[in-house]
Length: 348
Image 1 (cartoon, rainbow, N blue to C red):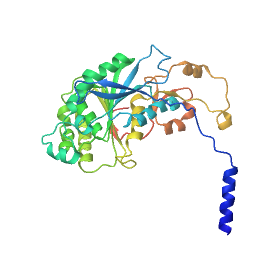
Image 2: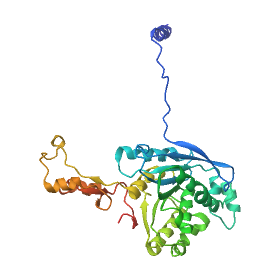
Image 3: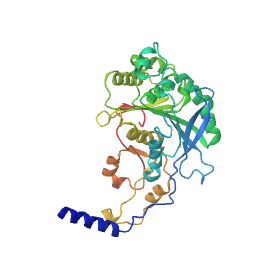
Image 4: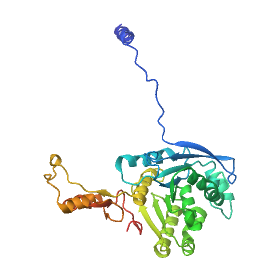
């Protein structure tokens, strides 16, 4: 009887309560534009290419921008979360703006994979025949890059970024076709490929590099077996045989990230290291424990009137800046944000 009374009371309350309002007339949140790009080089007739333009692109019609090309960058692949990192620049100003171009992969285990001596084991393990990477580079060089440069205000500085098998494509491209891009971002590349071929042969590739300035951001998670050994072989070659124009950094993330979690945090770190924006140290207000605000000296005013550039900034970590704050007021700083590189020459 008590149960029936409770049920009846609940029903009465439900009938007496007004119906919940429902959201209506929503507006889509647009983060990019996706285009269909015809290709005569790749299998199939077209690829989806998503483009995110920097905030303020239309308001500064004379400004040009670098381009970051993202492999596996289809609308349902890695594009959206990398676009979110690019947008975060509008909040933290920790790296320069760039045009983000995501390239859809259709059969990534074929089109991003280097040629192999015996394809059978790869076909059995991966369900695809490897060897499409040379054609994919032709697609980038002959079809996509010219199209992007003709359609948007690019400044001629390009980067290629990928993770896992796409990271291997980045390394293979750096070693075999180094003039295709200026910056190479390889997130946990599959260096086990062909029994660590690109780690074992890296030195011979590097010694044949043409002159020119290029940069490599390399990182790896808690990888094992040939995946990690191949990466260490590549690092050993970079130590001894990297050409003068190649700056590089290896960022160790094995203690904090797995192969599945690495991409997002290390993409942010790569953008900060490669495209870091100078900042300035200001005096804090007394309300939060800073010094009393006084009239600036002539020296302080001169510092404040100087535009901050990468060339006139002092490189340091945020921790060092905090400890030395009083000697740094109004000076330009280039902060080394995020995890420290284990080794390399990039950022020296």
